[in-house]
Image 1 (cartoon, one colour):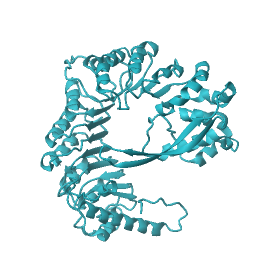
Image 2 (spheres, helix red, strand yellow):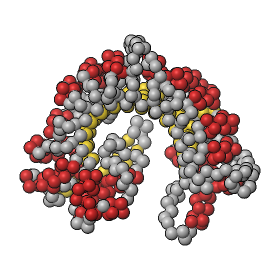
Image 3 (cartoon, helix red, strand yellow):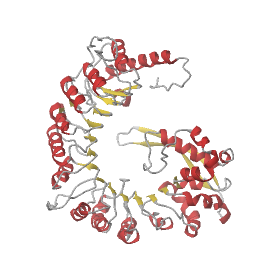
Length: 554
């Protein structure tokens, strides 16, 4: 192991895996850079005796093209940090720092010796267009020495460089991710079913910077490609390129059949499916990035209920509360009640929205009570959901196995009716709850009903809740709220508010930004609650002999 830590590319791999394991945001596909069971460097050290085979296979299972470049001798390239400034459409400035690699001499066969050693271990390769300039100097070697065991290729190159994909294609490819729409990509798709009939995982055009007219003309090509695939298990289409014949083909697939479907729209010209067969027999995860009508149209089109475990939708155009109610009703009618575990709905936040039209009612949430085995419910909209204590109580008793319950708003929920009292019910009825997002009125703090904990106790505590998102919840007495929260949620690590992601600039106000009154003031009070809990926990843990992780920036 000590010798391995002297090899630069291995140290880089260690650090990249540790970063990926701890970072909640990653630009990569979930299959690239992930390392199941790898927690920290100490775990790697334990593998010293078997490192020669098993650990190398683990570390090199999924790599980027940049990692391969770093296997070259250090006199081949130089790296430096480049700072850039990006201006958004709203003229907001964002500064970025990235590492740039430049080749400083021509490459020869001996420079690839290390890559040759690691090549048999590589199962997944990510190659982005930012590394295009290195392809001409390295591709001749890959042409003569292809990656023999490559299963997944994530190709993020545009028109000018797409054709280089040929140097990395392996007959064993089962996963293919093509980021950018281009004419070269469409030509490649026409031959895809013939070249890779065993393809099981396909993602197309996830980098949404293509030409709209090209995306429209891509529909027949994508359709022909999909209709030629018979082993597909997971499909992601980030552009609106799915037509009716392709969707009907996917619905009729038999074992192995489609398990995961992620689309940006559903065609309007769908023909009725016959009711004599089971369609989408293996579909377990369904995701939409589209208008709300597409999600409804798909569920209504299927002749029988789908045994989904996960349903999610990112609504591109803000749906009204009435439209949300309709979609939830359609979901209840189109999904097997006992199968659904995970439900998420992210409604668009656009200008000109009215809380009287877009505030989701508690009766809409009650529609989801038909699904009794939920472990995660996330609903996000401009003004959140108007729930009261009675609704939260019924929700806690309907979903006792819930682990994530987030009813969030982009602008704050006006005059929330739920109170701190509902949190006591959640602490009692939902012992697995770790993430909670809810708008409540914390201006009044209930009296603690202290008693002997255990059988017959009048109060309950939750040791599982770690994260609480209160949005713009009203609060007036932070110290009293902190005492109350500490009693029911002694291991709470963080409290999030709308002000955590908001910095009002000069000339801006809560009203001009569409936020509820008091958002900034309430945010300061909740931050004080967080600081009190943090200080209390620090004093309790002082001298215990294990590390403390800071839960909020100062």
